[in-house]
Image (tube, helix red, strand yellow):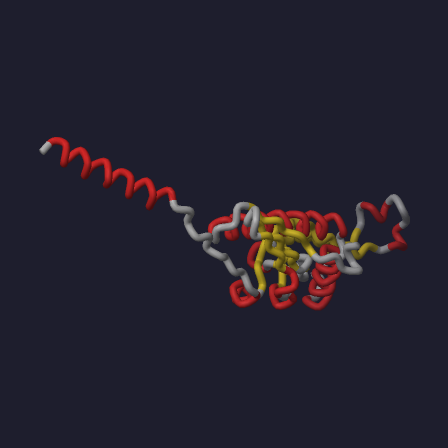
Amino acid sequence: MKEVILIIIALAGIVAMIYLGRPKKKKNVIVSKRTLTPMSKLATVEATVKTLIVAIDDDRKQGAVLGLFIRDRYYIESMTATVKASVDMEDFSEENIKTNATPNTISITLPYPKVEKANILQEKSMVIWKRGGDFSFEEIFDYRKQKQEELDNDTKIQQTIIDQAKQNTEEFFVAWLKTMGFNDATINFKKTKENS
């Protein structure tokens, strides 16, 4: 009886080894534009920038020295703005996806991040000092607009935000693609006339 039980256990072990040792079929992972474009705009970074608006309307007739102390109007506002960079997935196409089945890797070329115009947060901006007569609403609006244009044209701010956007996007896609079954993922960004 013992021999019969041992033979059954041995046969069960052999069947289990054959079944478990059989190579498993590789699951093909397909990444297409349809799975990526529902993201539309991938907001990758939003930076908060603090700056000052300084409006001075002095009487030049007072002279260089006296003009430093006698001013008709003096206005300083602490301004807070946000600057956002995003990757527009509408510009993405399936030609930008390359897969390699043998090591199960994927390479994706994404649109270059675009920096949106600075958004002034009125609720976080405040007047910190003013002296003399008041500036009109139109004058203050013009000073804010000038400051916004300065932020929009500041190459250092722009490049910092773009670099952070690229890093965030790469980390997001690499993690996402690995959960889809890829062993490794490489993320590139399209060269454009502006960034080449």
